[in-house]
Image 1 (cartoon, rainbow, N blue to C red):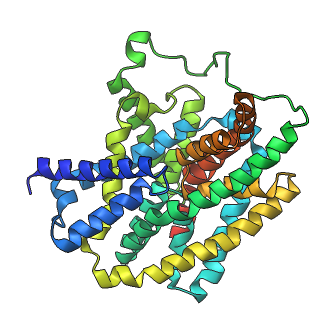
Image 2: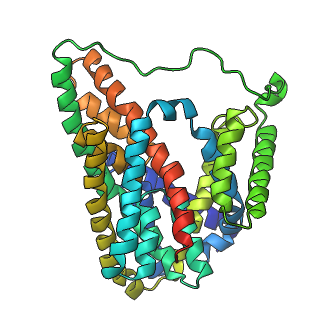
Amino acid sequence: MDGFIALTVVCVIFAVGDFLSLKTKAMCSVMFAAAVLFLIGFHTGILPQDIFVVSMLLPVGGILIAFVITHMGTILNLRELLEQWKTLIICAAAITGVGCMMYFIGPLFMDRVYAISSAPVFSGGIVATLLMSEAGDTIGRADLGVFAALMFAMQGFVGYPLASFCLRKEAKRLKKQNASGAVVQSISSENTKKKYLIPPLPEELRNSSNVLLAKLGIATCIAIGLSALTGGYVHKYIMCLLVGIILKEIGFLDDSIMKKANAFGFAMVTIMAIVFGNLATASLATLLSMAVPILIAFALGLTALIPVSILAGRLLKISPYMSIAVSSCTMFGFPGDYIISVEVSKSLSESEDEQKYILSCILPKMLVGGFATVTVGSVIMAGIMASFL
């Protein structure tokens, strides 16, 4: 297959995934739809097994993953994170509970490598999935990449219904609370211009894609260099995330820098290609053998996540349903946390003011929950769990 055609086919498959996600209101995630289409294509011979290599997505993605993780650090707003400190504690407790469950109990029911690697995937997104896939290659377990990719693809079918159910319960509680005349809140935004340690570039250069990507590259190189200075004790990708957060806070990196440079979309295509590249060589027998471990992983993950979230929420005086909802963000993150919050607030509101009130109560917590788990927590856990394999 010609490289141009291969790249086009991959993009079309992801586009179909987007379409199905839209039509099913994200119940059928992009990743799940794409995984099914790639599996059908590989095992029927419609798609060549080297499609990701021929399209040049694999080598490019291998480089861009560090850029993307540094970019993820620029998405975070430390002020908002600090304001939602209760949400952070609940999410941290839930992720820790899931990690302990998978590490100590998981091996009793499934392969130890699968059990340990499932914790970061359950608790995060594509980056955690990719990190565990790389860890599997390091220890000679190529099947781990397939397991992680399939589990990641299934997350939405578990996370979305759970979050929707809990948010609906929370919204009904908020409606009763608002019926007594509670003041409608609004999601605050920074009206004052923040002053940074590093002053902004001249207007002519500030929005240049080349300048933005150059700064991102410099930041990524700094992160990898710092990781090397620790002797690899701090994983290079964890360091990329931390450097991204710090350099954004002091003004060197722009907010959501890859999106501002119009480079994020294609970068994600290359990274998704890395995740699904493992499916090309997986036999049908291997795929079937992973069905039970994946189901067990989700069962154990929920067994830990739900009670730990409720307990942490009770200690912090957060309702049980809201606590579970923010923790369930581990299985989808942004934009799912935003979409579900808006859909629930609309469907259960009888007026615009009531919708604003409900949304202002649940959306900040859900957004912070998504960023705290998928963007930060799961990446840190993946670095930790990789050392236990």
